[in-house]
Image (tube, rainbow, N blue to C red):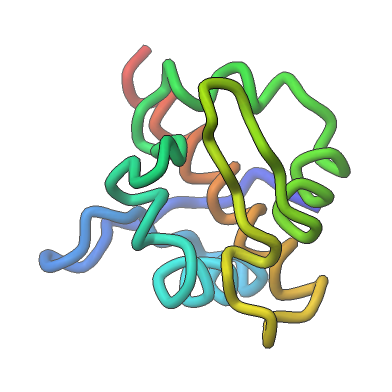
Length: 115
C-alpha cells in the first residue's frame, strides 16, 4: 500500500527521489536494480515516473491492476511491453509491489512538484 511519506532530496548523483518510508526505500533499491533501465529512460515505451503526463493515466488505475501488470507482464498500447517481474524472475510478488509502490510515489511526487 502506498502511503504519503516525506520525500528527501536524492543523492547528488541520482535524479530519483528518496522517501523515508522503509517500504519505499526497499522499493527504490529494487527499482534501481531492475526497473530503472527501462522506466528511467522510456525504453520500449516504458512510462517514466518523472514525466507527469506519462503517469497521470496510470495513477487513475487501481493499484492491484498495476501490481498485476508488473507481476504477470503486460502488452500496452502502441506495442509497448512490460515483461513479467520487470524481466527479473527472481523477484517475489512483494518485491515487485514495493518497486511499483516506489514508482507510484515517485510519479505522485513529480506531479505535485510540477503543479
